[in-house]
Amino acid sequence: MARKKIALIGAGMIGGTLAHLAAKAEMGDIVLFDIAEGIPQGKALDLSQCGPVEGFDAKITGTNDYADIAGADVVIVTAGVPRKPGMSRDDLLGINLKVMKAVGEGIKAHAPEAFVICITNPLDAMVWALREFSGLPHNKVVGMAGVLDSARFATFLAWEFDVSVKDVNAFVLGGHGDTMVPVTSYTTINGIPVKDMAKIKGVSESRIDEIVQRTRSGGGEIVGLLKTGSAYYAPATSAIAMAKAYLGDQKRMLPVAAYVEGKYGLDGLYVGVPAVIGANGIEDVVEIELSDEEKGNLKVSTDAVEELLEACKNLDGDLA
Ligand code: APR
Image: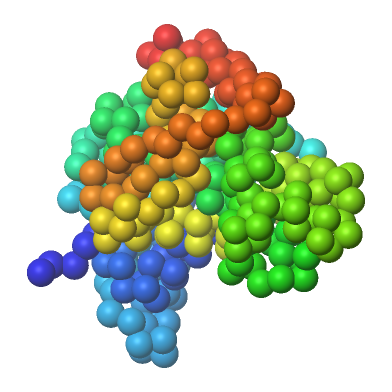
């Protein structure tokens, strides 16, 4: 059987990390695409030379030509500009919308059968725009945010309760912004609801609220520390988990930015929800019951996403 082909659009910090992770896991041959000349070629060469040391078989190439992504099984998009300190994800909107247009057209022309995972921020708006520009079916275009956001939530909870991260099942809904909704009622420590675990461990409600808040601003915290860019290790590994779910038809239920029509009272919007990823892409969106407060928080979050979509439509007539 021929190897799978993974195209990475954007060969920056996340793109390079994605290539390394995908090669190490022998997920397939990898094409790194970027508009910057030399960067994808240089990274591809450097990463190829990891092969003999790490013992992986993967052909890694770098290109500035969309034709080279032809026939890709998975496309992961990180092209764009990352956040700088003081910049919100939304500030990125205008710049990255133009990038999504070019990328969407490139995918449409050369890899229309691919499963496309978008990472570029502001995520919920960019994945929507990428889908619109590419014209691919909604089930084949998805955004990576929830896996990362719930990993952040899980990390902080594991630290607080002094338990393994493996035993924390954290649940996050909504947009990938400061309005995201970490849902504590569905978050458990090996089946024990967080609220109960907090009582057992003598952790106050306000401390849990602080952890929820830290999760919401988890990306910004890293931007503030790095100063020259945004997080890349955890975003990359989160997208790899999604790509593996698709390539392996794993039917994993993961929190992702999926297209939601009808469920959660939404009418055609990309937003973070639990969804099943298998060989058909997004195979199901799972609607869970929420408390009134959680519903209210989700509404605030989806309203923020809708506002961004309006802004996109105003910026580009093709989206209206
Ligand atoms: N087509 C292809 N690549 C592009 C384009 C374009 N039109 N415009 C910019 N790029 C490339 C840049 O040349 C750069 O190599 O995208 C790459 C982005 O890499 P970084 O600046 O290192 O950003 P990174 O940390 O990888 O984050 C990428 O993911 O999490 C989000 O907010 C983050 O939107 C940002 C994206």
